[in-house]
Image 1: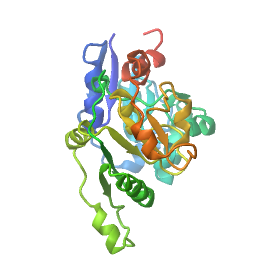
Image 2: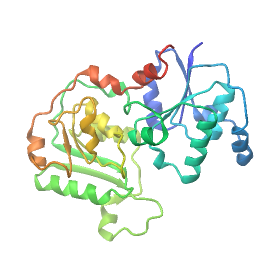
Image 3: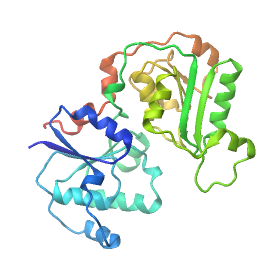
Length: 299
């Protein structure tokens, strides 16, 4: 019997699922799987009742946090393992409580890239993952930096990094999407932010023509973001605020600058240092195939 992956419908998830087209897995997207629910309150109540799991023993719920969908997977396909592509802290208080209660009740194994969540909730750990199709062996030189993301309290840090790059004549493109329901932006901040999201294709185009990526971690997040993996895969320099990158396989000081933490060198000195190419054997540790091998050892 083939394994089954039920993935959310984010474009980046669909892009990632191309990695397993030649593997022994069927991929189904949430919008094609989810059944229409008339009474969500009853569906949540039903999810906590005793039930027999479906027949498949190799099931991955990829980046799915909704317990109604998880329970449909549980009953119809089989008891899933869950990969969280966001820290638990990104959930609303209600959804966090429902999710944690449900996976505990059903004894569902949850995997995450965030070590805080591993320590707090007993989840299994795997490094952040991205598409192996992004792996490259060459180094591109554009003298250009790029950041894209929702504000989430990071705007001031992004502006400071951009200012530091401007002072050393490094071209930088900053795409910060305003937080919804935040009416406190100044006139100057409105001028450097936007309400428009980049499509994933537009985002990849910007990454492709930049040789420096900017990564600003949220709150106390310890797991690395997709930006970090994109820089690793494509041999780009990375300016990040996340000091935990030093513990990841593939960390290389010639390639990574920890903003606000380094006193022994300047950003200019960092950028002028030649980029090192990281071995593909290390990069493959950060792929979906590697995650599946760790999750389903016997399969």
